[in-house]
Length: 348
Image (tube, rainbow, N blue to C red):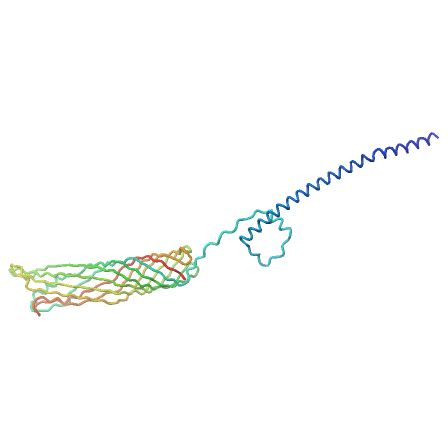
């Protein structure tokens, strides 16, 4: 009886325990679920913020892509969707700089040039022969004739050029150029000499000869080859040479007098003048620097040495009545000199 009563009490106690502790367990379970939901909500907020930033960066990249589109790489495979999220988090690069200019010297060109020319040349005079009845005066007459006129011509030169360049190997440039210039290169010189013509006699006698010589180049042209090297892409250092031609003009004149006796009266006088103009051809050699300051424009500085040969004049200085005293004079005019000029070219 007593055991049965204890059993009933145990059952009742167990029931009361179940009834009393069930709400506590339920409350504990609800707290855990709330914490789990809060964690999930925080994660969703972070993911949402990340998606917003990704979308903002994507819009910015799309705007930059419109301004500076980049061509897709050849043979590219289909992109992984996850790559968009990686790219969105990467820093955005600035648009690429424009490519450096490409220099090419190959092609035709035309241009203008201007500068100056000068010659350290002379007109050389010599007596080939004498004639006349006053043979004793041949030597003093020849001695009185100036052997040289130091004309040293100089002046302006300017014109245009056309040519072609071919770039190869890859820092070498070969080509040709033809140019033509008007010129005003000229010079004049005079000389006067006196020689004793007494011949050992007691009566004083002298012969005086005055002379003048002039040289002039009216126009000048060349046809040359060019070979150059590029130490840097826009700078050409070149050598050049070929044909040179020009219009030259020489003028030489002499006047002579023989003074005899105490009164120094001129008993024998004479005058002669010779002039010759012709087109002469020769050669030229030189070099220069040319700078490409824009894709189609260059400027240059150039030096040329030229030699157009010589021009020869023959004339006779006759003094006194016909057959009294004369000298056959040959004058050789040299045309070789220098040109320094600057120019500008336009390349086709």
